[in-house]
Amino acid sequence: MNLEKPKFLESLTIRASDERDLDAIRAIYEIAVLTGTGTFETEVPSLEEMARRRVEVLGRKLPWLVAEASGQILGYAYANYFRPRLAYRFCLEDSIYLHPDAQGHGLGKLMLAELIARCEHLGARQMLAVIGDAENQGSIGIHRALGFSHTGVLKSAGWKFGRWLDVVMMQRELGQGAQNSPESSPESHPQ
Image (cartoon, rainbow, N blue to C red; front, side, top):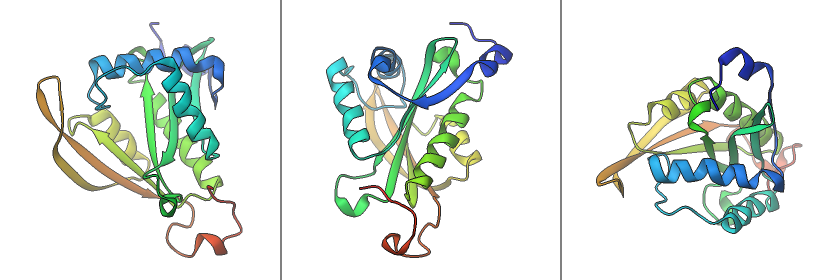
C-alpha cells in the first residue's frame, strides 16, 4: 500500500464507518496492538469485539469514521465517553489509528479535525487525548496542532514490549466549552 502524497490526497474520503469496514479496521488495529505503543492492549481483539466496540460508540450517537482512498481503508477514528458514568457524556476521548503506510501524510490531522467538528456539532464540550507512550511525537504533535494542551503525564502507567510506558494527557475545549450549562445550550448533545 505505498501511498504517494498527491494521489493519496486526491482520492481521500473521510466518512462514517459501516459494518463492511470492520475487517480493515481490525487489521489496522492488529498492527497497532502487535507492533505499537499507541495502544496498551496486548492481545488483538476479535472481529466480534471490534464490532461490539463500534456498536457501543454508535449507540451513544458518537462518530466512528474511516479514511478511504482508492477503495482502501487507511485509518479510522472515533470518539467515546472518557469514562462510562453519565456525568462524563460531554467529555469525549478521541482514538485514531492509521495503517503504517498512511502515516506521515497528514491523514491523522485530517481525521482528528473531522472528528472534532462532528463532536462539536453533537454538543460535546471537552475532548481528551490519552496518548499511549510519551515518545509518540506524531500523535502529540497532531493534537497540539489542533489546539490540544498538555494536561499531564501518567508515569510508567503501562508495561509493553519489555518497558514501562508513560501516558500523555491532552485536552481541548469543544464548542462553548465550560462557558455555560450544556442543558441551556440550543445545540444537541451526546446522550
